[in-house]
Length: 173
Image (cartoon, rainbow, N blue to C red; front, side):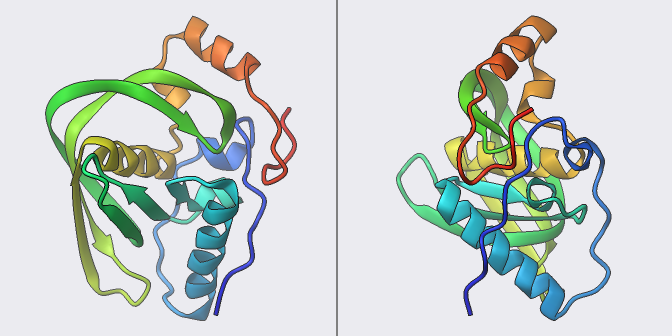
């Protein structure tokens, strides 16, 4: 079964700025959400997508992200916690909910996410470089934090002015 792509919410929508609720019910509805998130991610050609980005306030994210060596990592994590280590690495970052612009942002070089999968079985995912950045970005979404929230106010305003509408996004304010 394949999911249906949902519109991706854009900065300004309250769901993006609110910490998510823990998933407590595992079953067909959660499976469908994850399938729809993967479909949305594919349409938008992204590398990660958190449930708030499709308007759902649950602690789940999906990823289809290469690491710095080009190895593709695909999966999902429900109710994640994250630990980071290593020196901060500054690299360009963007977001499907801030469509269009990118900006340099420091993130830890390594990240490990622990949670469960859609059946409630334990999951642990670790990454370095670009994949570590993806894991940190998506877990931030579940806390109600966007990558632009890490930027100084003047840079954040510039990024917001550079946003562009895409057909896979909800309307840009």
